[in-house]
Image 1 (cartoon, rainbow, N blue to C red):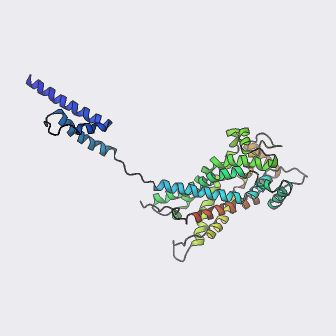
Image 2 (spheres, rainbow, N blue to C red; image 1 turned 45 degrees about the horizontal axis):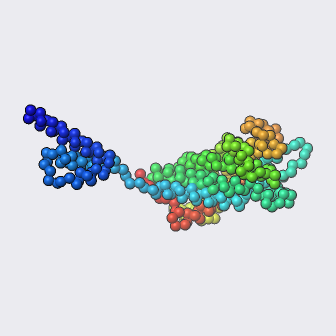
Image 3 (tube, rainbow, N blue to C red; image 1 turned 180 degrees about the horizontal axis):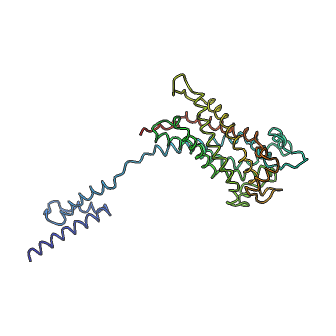
Length: 370
């Protein structure tokens, strides 16, 4: 009997101890209750055993759930890149918008055999719109651009910079020394990311640019075309932006390195705003010119629904229509306008980015060694 009672007491002590540990872990305030019990308890008592097991349980739980402290520096740097790209994108887009309007009008007009075209070149188109429709018409469609260019620029430039810095961190180097393949991939990522914003923004912008004074408001256009309609032409838009980013950013960074090279190998002086402008113009001409066919097809698809236009235009129909109008040459309609808009726009954007990086707190983050 006595051995049975002793066994029962041992079982009760262990059960109470386990129960106290579980309760103390799930509800920490019970730990305070245990600590209020008399300190002079018999060491064999279940309460004393519970206090001992509680202390050990806390140590086990603490070691199990311990995690490294959160380092917000990477997140903060990424947000800085996005904000910087957004501000630069908005300013650059606004300054060259009349050129963009001229480019859109030239790309959209249909060539008719024996008929004189209305829009001949960028300068003539800007002058014609200003005199016949008024100077404000040169900025018709600027509202969606101002709204969309901030996130568009943030995604394009910000994602490119973030991916470049990620490559640099993992390779234990600086972002200006990553391999060319990494530069191309980073630029393509920036281009792909911006399509989420650039396609709906340009769909609304193009409809307003073509319609001129008769154009509906942004809200009305969005209601008319719907979410699906906002992404009309996304395939040529994606092709354009991915190839543009893959060409532009590597070329920009390498031209800038050439401009800032010193007599010492792998030693470069700090880039100036003029260096960024020059590199941006060179890279912009190459990237914008080579992706012009994507842009022309996109414009034809996104102008669907405007007065005098078909309600929808497929990728195949737009491509066939352009080929019938003039063969391969037709895919470069508005070439001067596209290069004349994109090259200075991105040059201005990246010059602004370089200027913002000189503001205390906006410097690029240091590369991490492996």
